[in-house]
Length: 282
Image 1 (cartoon, rainbow, N blue to C red):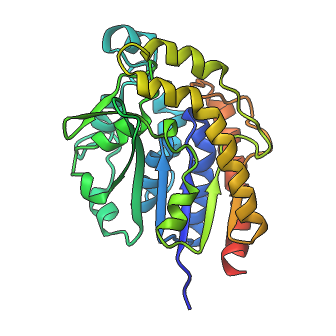
Image 2: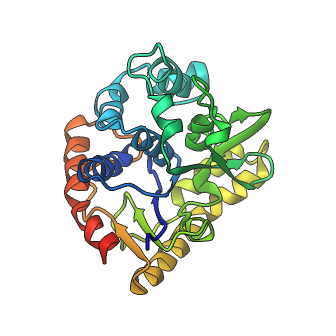
């Protein structure tokens, strides 16, 4: 009897290149999942995985991600967003772009796809699915990846959204609620990392006046992340979940611009994915 399986990618800015390695290895091994849930950069990783575009995300991180049009202080000054989401999910990803998403392959994929975002005004979690994504309209991805203050909130159907990590940073419970019996969780920090709120408190102060509820969610994000990872470990002890996480981040931080460091982290993810097949077959 086939068991419903899920994969959760928590993102983490440029550290998401680790998950790229994991997912490319899954494609090479012929590993497919019934449900994929991505947070922030994790949603971008999973949409290419669903489309079967091996290596696509790696190029976005290690090549395109170094371009000034992709990310930089100039974008922040003139476009209110350090990462230009319109460049990433428009200029590069649309059908006439430099490296288009294979939208038709994505829609044909049997994997149920969810991208997590947070309503800027209410702080509520939104799980976008395939029905919310149209050819050359990847607003959902922009919304899921919009780090507060670093990026401005993005609109989907007239509602503004921030990064999904504010409200559901490690959405493993969502995967089980969707009927998954086994879940693979990709973290982009070492498993034993205890997150602190220092950086989040600074970012929250910048959005407090206009988006107070989202600011509150941001202040609570580290604690929620730690709680969710603790829950993941409980599921892992029950044999229901596998945590795939780097033992070292190779010097890659959220807004890293070091291609060699990212390539090392990618290769680490590729190697770490070897244990997924055994977990799913157990």
